[in-house]
Length: 409
Image (cartoon, rainbow, N blue to C red; front, top):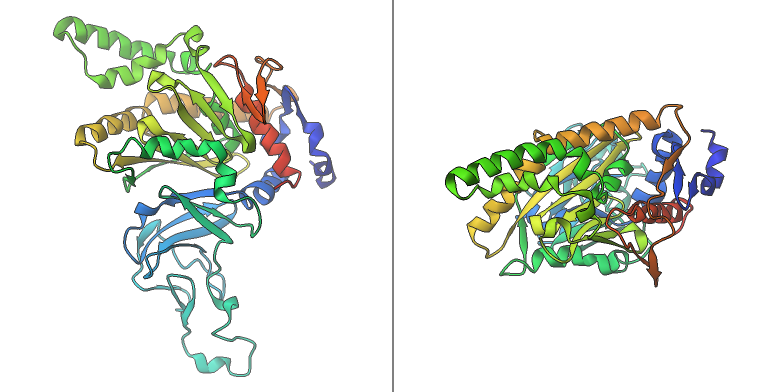
């Protein structure tokens, strides 16, 4: 697509359909990085990922390599992972403990864990130059804004914009719902996560998280096989392990999915109420890069890598003060449904790839979001779907997408 065409992105987004190029065009992807991921609040991690001073965890925000680190003052900082000397990343590992300083492996510039420059080797070589070791220019640059909510750390690379609480709005219930399940009112991260690279555009994953129509199709074979085994065990033993029900639940018929409801908030956030019947309200997606499943004590962070490659990190948590059995139950679901090796995850990954390949073809221009279009209820900017299988979440996400890509705050 020519750069000039990006001046009129509105012609690619209609109320009930979007042009396929918003998923496949590299220029639009770069525009998304600049106007969405480099500006909005992005989930960085949980503060318990860096429990001790010197603990760090690396990640990517949009195009930017970043590092979350706990300093000696016990504060959590989010820094650009870039040496001020020649630009090398100061952290090459995914996580670890760096002690009191980061040391660049290229020329041994050292930085304190709050980003300030500690020392330069052979400093006598800089007399009479414009390099001043005390200048902030030669520190590790910090994310413009960092905030946290109930232990969940977010960063924005933009100096101005809504506060984190303003951005989350009522969708902050995603974190309240998880933390309030814990007797101590807090959660702690399980250090290891599943990391999956999907060969598809990042928006396809987010849409799938709110798609209540696909489980009965995509996961029907897995659910049916689990159900048959579950019934066989029940006949022989009177009761089957809960693990089988995690999978057999995917046999839920279409009409039951229509009994749930989506609540679609400003900024693209959405709640899928009644998911799996676990609770009346089960938060799901915080746009543009986070899916929270509080009843299951887990979340998925979405990190776009390119127009057709997306990294998802699947984290799970312990409820502080809860019995070990509660954690084991959540761990069972985490391993059976969300690990890269499960049939459920494999089904989704296959569909994501098929979607992207089809969208990149010349087989059609538009992506349909017509299901129950024009039949939602809206009040004060919040869209309530009347049916669980409505494509209202997708329409709401693109409402936010259009606002951000057009330069809105």
